[in-house]
Length: 328
Image: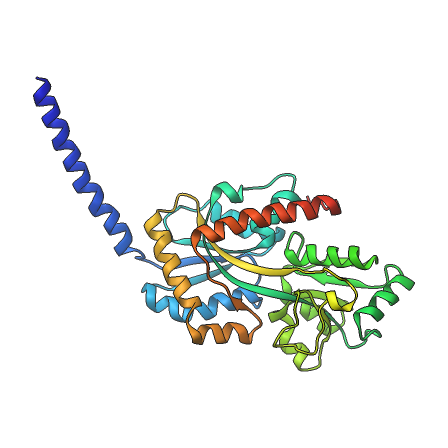
């Protein structure tokens, strides 16, 4: 009886292994079978939106299905990333998030609608992106030093737009105010694009935006560039100083975008997406297009991106606690 039971058990194990292996192989080779929704946590016209559309030119062909951009801005990335976290983990919903939504918001918001560390699966870093402080041409100051002196002489005189509460641009604006010891009226927007456009039209005098949103306007002379937030000057704006060399020694804040999926997405699907996205990011034609709009492609391994997310979460948590920033 025992021998029959053991024989039956072996047969069942063989049958199950014969079933599971083809299913795993099928999941890896058959994916994708329909268009893939990519939730972008910023509005149309912003840098992350432009980046995905550049990548789509290659990925649509390599994946055999279209990437469909779904712009869901707001709440520092929480609105869009919540949609990703709650989606089916089948590889057909991906998210493009930034430092705010993926690392800082857990320290900014007392009640988060999702847990980034538990409900999102990292795929790869996509791009790094410097920020720039710009102003309408009517602003009297021409340098960071002059701007700070003017702001100190008339506290509250200047309002500065940024890409939205909880974003890295928000935190970079707060850090600028702290290090310069000035009082600015912060104006949050749903992304860099709208902030840059309002500075362009004179609705606000100043804005701290990502480079792609402002680069062409700066080159056209329609926006005044005071400084970049990166530790080094940019090849695309060689005459614009860094904040660190403008008197705020040690200032360093660079934005980035990363690709995530709902937690529980099968490993073969994550690996396929990682392979295709990193290959696209290493394509010289795509790299040139991204650099042309002020973005630096920075593909990474899944493990490296996961480690970076944990490191950034700790870093921004400390900055937020010191600045006593809280959002509702």
